[in-house]
Image (tube, rainbow, N blue to C red):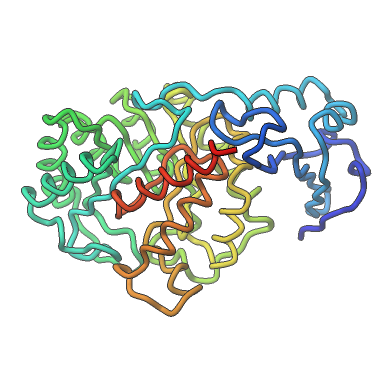
Length: 358
C-alpha cells in the first residue's frame, strides 16, 4: 500500500526505517546534477516503509532530508551515491546517453523474429545500426517472450557466435543477451564485451561465469519466468520492490568478483509487469540512480504501447517507443535499448538540443 503525505517531513525521521529517495528531475539549473549526467533534482520524494508494510511518500528538499534524517551520515551517503558521476561502462562515457541496437537471431522473437537468422544479415544489420549511431549492439539467440519455444544452449550458441565474431572484428561493441553461463563464456571469448541477463545472473553458474569473463554486466529485474511472467504480476510498491531486488543482485555480483564499475541495471519494463506497473517504472526511473550504477531502459516495441494505443503490431510501435525512450532520457537513463536506432538517435538529438536551449 502507498500513501502520499502533505507533511513537511515523515512522522518518523528518514532513515530511521527503510528509506528510498526519488529525485524529482528537471532540466533547469536548480539542484545538483544526477549521476554526472544532464538532469538535476531540487527536491525528492522520500519513501519510507513502516513496519506494517505501508509506503509513505513525503516531498522534501535535500537540506530537509539531511537535517531531519535519523542518521545524517547515511542520508549524505545515499545522496552522494545519486549525484556521483558514473565511471565509463564498457568504455562508454556515461555523462551522455547511448543507444543500444537490438538484434534477435531467433525465429520467434516478438518484434523481429526471423529477420536476423542468417549470420550475414545479422552482421549487416549490426553494422548499419553502428553507422546510424548505436554505441553497442545487443545480440540474443533465445526468445524470452511468453510461450517461446525452448532451445538448447548449442542452438543458442550457433545463432549468436557468428554475428558476435563478425561485429567485434569490425571494432563494434557487442553485448550478449543470455541467461546461461555456457553462452556467456563462449560469447565473451568470441568478442562480446557486455553480458545482458534478463535473469540478473541467477541461473546456475551465471554470476561466476560472468565474473570470470571480466565483461561488464547488465542486471535486469523480471518477476517470474518468461512462460508465466505476465500471469497476474503483483507488487507491494513496484519501484521499491524492483530497487530492492536490483540492490541485492548488485551485491551478489560484487561478492562474486564483478566490480561495481562493470555493472549497469535494467528495471525490466514489460517483464512481469502490467501496463500500470510499466508506466510507474518510467515515472519513477530516477529512483534507480540511488543504486550508483548506470541505468539501461528498454521499452522498444513492447506490448504496453499497443495496449495504450490501438493494438498495433510490434513493427508499428515506433512512435510509442520513441515517446518512452525520451521519457527515460529525461529521467537520466544512460543507455536506451531500441530496435529503431536511427529514429531514436534523431529524437535524442532534438531532446538534447531542447535541454541546452535555455
